[in-house]
Every structure is written in C-alpha cells, then in structure tokens.
Length: 413
Image (spheres, rainbow, N blue to C red):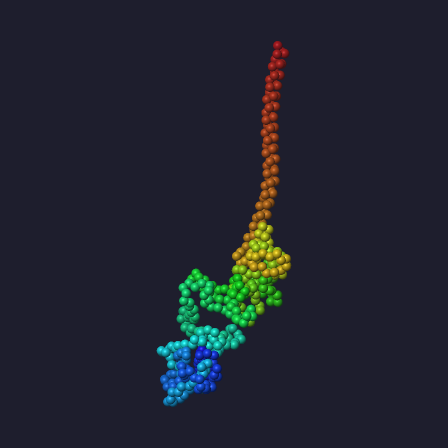
C-alpha cells in the first residue's frame, strides 16, 4: 500500500507499506525480526532540480532524503507487518523511471487521505462546502488548454461493445439497507449496442426527464406527485387557465434548468417526459387517462378511454400504466408528456367541440327538412292526382256535352 501525505516542508511525502502500517510516521522501527527484502536507503539526492516523480516497488525499495549529501548509505530495518515512511520529518523524493514519468507498484492500493484504500487509487477527504467552488470537491482534474478540444477524462474497458454489466461509472451513497456496505445508487454502463446508458439502482432508477420551474406563488405548498398547472413557465396547483397541465417528479433520471445555488427552495421539479408517479383518487385501470380532479388539490382522477369527452382531452396529465382498486389517494405510475395539452391543442379541441355542435344542429335541421320534403313529395303526389282527376273530369264533361248534342239533334227531327 502506498499513500501520499503532507510534510513539514510543504512538499509531498510517500507512505509505503506491505500491509496496514504499524509504525507511526517519524518513529524509528526496531531492528529485530527484519525481513531483508525491505530496506530504506538514505542515499543523498545530490541531483540538480530534484524530480518530484517517484518509482515505488512492492515489496518497496524506498529512497529517502533523511541524510545530508555526502553521508554514507544506510539500511534501516522495518517490521514484517509493514513500514511507514518517512522516518525523518524531511520530504521524500524519488527518482523517475524516465523523464517526466513515474511508476507506482502498490498491490495493496494507493491512498490519498486514507491508509486503507479499497481500490488501486482512492482519494478521501471530508468536505461540506458550497458546490459553486472548486475547493468544495475532493478531486479536481483540469485541462488548462484553451484550444477547441480540451478533453478532460477518458474511461476505457477492454471488452468490445460492453453491455449493462460493464459499469463505466458507479455512484454510491451511504448504507441505506443497514448491511454495513455502501449502496449503489446509479451507474453509467454499456448498452450492448455501441453506446452507454444511465440507470439508478437503489429505487429502480429515475423514470422521466424533468426541469426545475419556479412556483407562481412562493408560499404555496406543492408536493412530489402533485398535478400542477404551468402558466408563463411557473407552477401552481390551480389548474384554471393553465397553459400546460403537468406533474411534479419524484425520481427524475435527468434534471435540467437548474436554479442558482441557494434558490432551489423557490422551484419545483416538473416531469416533462417519461414515467412519473402521480397522485390519483379512486379506482384506476391501466390505460385510463389521468386528469385533474377539478379541486385544485394536486390530485387527479382516472377516466376510461370509452368515457372520454372532447372537453377532457385538453386536461390529460398522462395515461396510467398500472391498476389499483384503492379508493383513496395514492401514487399511480403514469406515462406523461407524449400528448400535448398546451393552449393550441385546447383551442383546436374547442373548435372541434363547436363543429360537433354545429353538425348536430345541422342534423336536426336536416331531419326537419326531410320531413318537410316528405310532405312536399306527398303534396306533389296529391297535386299530380288532382291534375289527373281534373283531366278525367274534363274528358267526361266533353263526352257528356257531345252526348247532349246528339240527343238534341234526334229530337229535332
């Protein structure tokens, strides 16, 4: 194990041990029970511009600067359980392997700020600061280039096209489940298709893309899972005249539009797209549409697609992806963001409603006209019949007149 430690001169020193150290820094290890493979060499470092690069081997062969130039080389014993350097309060400098390079061979890991690293390299500190400043972070990697491509960090695995078992970056929190181990809360891993994916592990991962939006009324209390109206980019539980109807996220996988530090309490996290738990009152069936209750209480209700009316579509929050027989209020996993309930859609639906009313009115008028037309057809039939009767009457009248003329002629004879 190897560890960088500060020294009195402000330069780094190196702690090297075969196992957890049992010799305090600055003390002289006893000469008894000394394995010959571990030696501390006090050869003076009489070199121009002493290098700040080190070469360490395990078992370590350590070169110290604890003696002045010209003094003889000296071997210092150490216990078999380990050796802690420096033995003197002077900084330790090591020769580089080549120019501008050094090699650390530490089978027990290399620790900075810790004497028991869990990995080949572990940097540990205890900081509780303002995230706006670099000094609040444990580690800094900086590329000072002012060119057009100042890359900073590269991560590589040996496997071609790694899948989800290959974690390029893993995120750990504290011991959530009480088993004595830190718990994995998220990872960036391979996707098996030539790319990467992000997933959360502790609670099943985030399910939606969300953004921070300010509250319309600062004092209003809004909770995760509440249905909110968005007016002018600000959120409130009052739905009337809202430009959008959305829901506050519980576990976003991506969170954008972050407010300035210290102003988070003025904002809420609003789900834009994906799966989000929504507060719903009453029985829900998977596939039902979720919309506001109308009470401005942040709670929704479920409506079956068969019962949807045109007025409902402009208020859809999302579509339920799970069922529940509970009659109270609880969270229901809901697909949000795949339909638009913005003002333009509302106007379109209003127009459709007006058109439907007009079509209904036209239908009523058409039925009346059809009745009138039917009567007109009957009138025309009667009129035609009357015309036929008039024609027949005229023929009879003509015959009668002719017959009358004949009879008169015979009488006159």
